[in-house]
Image 1 (cartoon, helix red, strand yellow):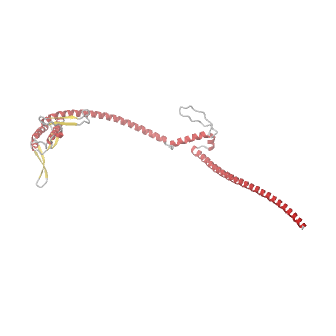
Image 2 (tube, one colour; image 1 turned 180 degrees about the horizontal axis):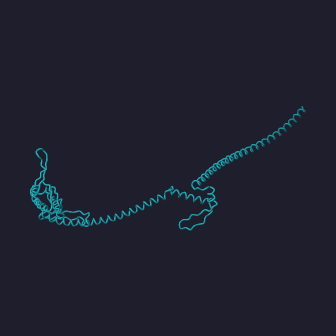
Image 3 (cartoon, helix red, strand yellow; image 1 turned 180 degrees about the vertical axis):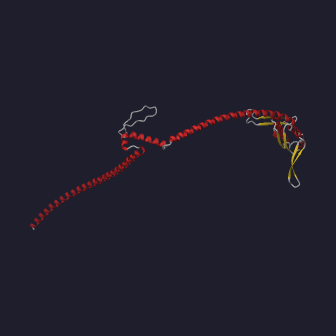
Amino acid sequence: AESVSAAAAYAGAVVHAATERAATAVSGLDAHAREQQTRLTGLRTDLAAAQAELTALTDDIHRDEVARAAQEARVEQLQLKAVEELGIDPAVLVEDFGPHQFVPVITGAGEEPREPQPYVREIQDKRLRRAERGLRELGRINPLALEEFAALEERHAFLTQQVEDLKASKRDLLDIVREVDQRVEEVFAAAFHDTAAHFERVFARLFPGGEGRIFLTDPTDLLTTGIEVEARPPGKKVKRLSLLSGGERSLVAVALLVAIFKARPSPFYVMDEVEAALDDTNLGRLITLIEELRSASQLIVITHQKRTMEVADALYGVSMRGDGVTSVVSQRLRVLEDSA
């Protein structure tokens, strides 16, 4: 029993020592595992960062390749444009106008010329934008502009000459119009003066004891003036024609008509029932004037008055026969002096 107890104690001590060693080993392994886990996490983080950087570099390389392709296409386009539009080889164009050449400075009117300056891209880009903006404002270039300008200049000279001719013609016409207006005024003034004088005398004969006159509404402008007629029959104070009777207005009109006939005689006159509204007394006065007028002119009088017909040299009328057909009837009342 003692041996077994001693063996058991020994075994327990061995087991306890082994257990401690195992626990120590486990603790070391756990620490090592945690260290490896921490290292693994760091490596994964570095891997993710490396992958992101790789992706970014790949994108940059792709963009650079696209930009390089675009630049190469742009260069080829510029080379082709230089050959087609300018007729210059690209190498010669770069040699003559490349960045290593000095750039001339364009000065405005009245400014002193300046020395050429080295090429600075920012400055030249600004000049290029200003030039392109000015070119857009100018619009599309017309290669036939010089020919069109010459044609328009010739047309302008022709039209200018025509305008000058029209102005000269207008001045001549205005001079003629002024002369005609002056002549019209002179003739009208003389005719009006003579008519006014005859109207007063004729009116006095048709209206014994009455007064009548004609006057101008605007004596300062004979071309646009109107004519007013004043008539005052004997025994009346009114002068306006609207206040006279129908027979009086008709007789005043006849007086004005006869005054015009006497002021400016004519070879013949036509009267259409001018005495229709007159009574016997006034008709007799009018017939007296008609007999005076026919001594120097021929008169054609349309009338229904018997007394007027009695003083005529010849009568012409329209009669209806029994069958309803009208016919013209003429009758000479007296032999004219010319045919006697």
